[in-house]
Length: 126
Image (tube, rainbow, N blue to C red):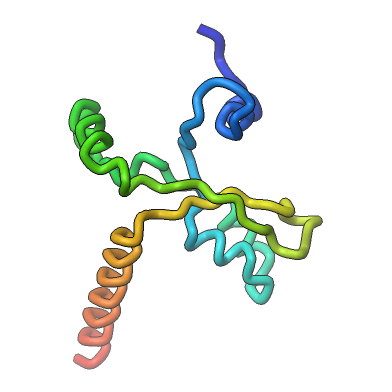
């Protein structure tokens, strides 16, 4: 079996040939950091370099469990959208591919964030 380089794999994802499955994706959260030109450049570059597994909504179960989760919950998988990059093109590309998750995931993250904030506030008030 022939091994693919990183560039070849990216080319395949972009639809040039072969499989069209994103293995690692730039999340919405990190995209927002990348385009925020008020943040330090190092923080933005770090956010741009960080990728998440596209299959993370499938859970950490066995391969069979993940396949069954894919079939049952395909609509919850991320969709990769092409978005405009920040204006400082010397550091970032003009367009960036960003994962857009199902709204349910955003709601869950918000609820977890609020719960964490309340717990932290309770500890500070003690």
